[in-house]
Image (cartoon, rainbow, N blue to C red; front, side, top):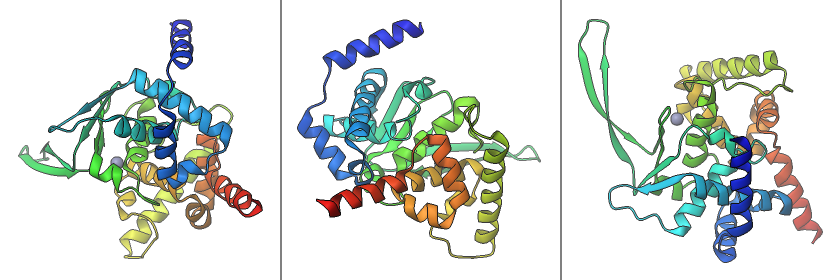
Length: 261
Ligand SMILES: [Zn+2]
């Protein structure tokens, strides 16, 4: 099976290329992608080709999935797994795209056995064992520190070992004790600051649950990494080991190259 999969992937990469102009346009429209090295960009391209071959993108509420939209989602979804590989996303195939925010019905039975029902307005959702759901409007307005694609796919990475709990399993070469300790302590400290009404440069939503903390800080890690490294250096260091990338160093290198030109 593993052999068959790698053979299929190799064949797809030999046969399929994305429209170069479209690819360049997508990469140029996201600052955190345009800083990638030539070699990283080539790898991201190949991952995006495989992603589009193996995942099924569906439009909801009349949304049409254009090549532009498909490539924009694939490129951003593949950034966190640039050094980890596409197998991390093996547990699901569907990506559902709504034109804007979408309603989901929630139900909960409280301790008195009373059923509560309410509607939630979402910009994205990652269903355990199911699809990733995205609001295109929110994908499109992503900026530094806000990226719904990276957020939802970070939940998927977290779900690799079961429910999203904010503590994805570290790689064998990482110090597991240190990884869990830093995630837990940084989350607890962040929640205390939010509870105390303190202003932070990060989205308060990260204080909701360790899983949201991991997803929000993954957004920061990729789209505003220098800020994250300055504010939460221990967490930044652990995420760099986990994702096997150093996006802050990448920006600094790209800036040096820009100056040297
Ligand atoms: Zn979330």
